[in-house]
Length: 236
Image (cartoon, rainbow, N blue to C red; front, side, top):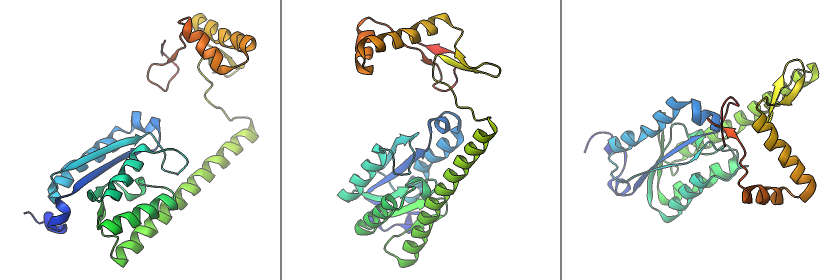
């Protein structure tokens, strides 16, 4: 057994190591590929510590950890902790596990109950030890505070732009922002036609669901950005 494996008791190495992979937004998933790569590389780190059974949970890619959205990956992680199947949770930064105190301390308590460790780039944490508990708790509080500060800065920046008349949001599919005229139809006639059909059907049927069922039944398709972000090319 190598020196890294000595960090964990043999009974923990018989359990599963879980690699928790998460990024907050779909934009990060599409563009921050190095962060993804570093997180998936934690599999090798877990093997270096001596774990054989390794499970990668990446169901939360593109989902914020602020507690306002459902996180199937985090829920699966909690279920595995409750079953006592986990020996260690690996993550690039512990702040990626949760950005709100409720989820954070719940995870901390579960790890302490089953004697599981949490591993990030700073080291290995044992929630049963008071110093590790204190350090992990402080990291959680700092992470939650940091999220609040970032949110406040973004809101204030948007308000400042709005006061100057410079606030711009990306318009929905079918519309474009023009510097001179403001919001305008996409020049593509096919896209214009399907957007007009949606509004006409809604006036007739009075329900978004009925519009969806009617257009789906007639095989009328709606465009979406090919890459999921930029409104430059579409798939129908």
